[in-house]
Length: 83
Image (cartoon, rainbow, N blue to C red):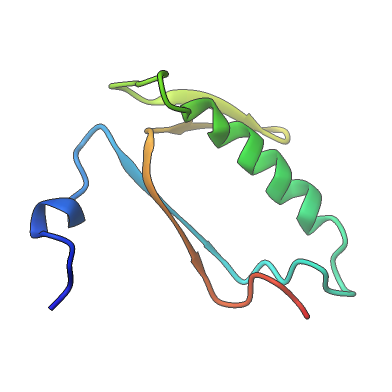
C-alpha cells in the first residue's frame, strides 16, 4: 500500500501537474534541449513558496505564451539524462 493518502493524489482545479519526458540531456544530437528546458524551469520557478496563485499565470517560454496553474507535482519520465 502506498504511503500517500488518496487526497494527496488529487489535483485541485487551481493546480496542475507537469510531466517532462525523454529530454536526453547531455546527448549528442540536440544541444538546444538543455537551453529550452532551462527556460521552462525558469518560467515555472515563478510559482515559488510565498507566491500562491488561484488562477492561471501567463508565462513566456521562448517565443510562446502559455497559461499555467501552480504545479502540485513535476514528474520526470523516461530518459532525462543521456549518459
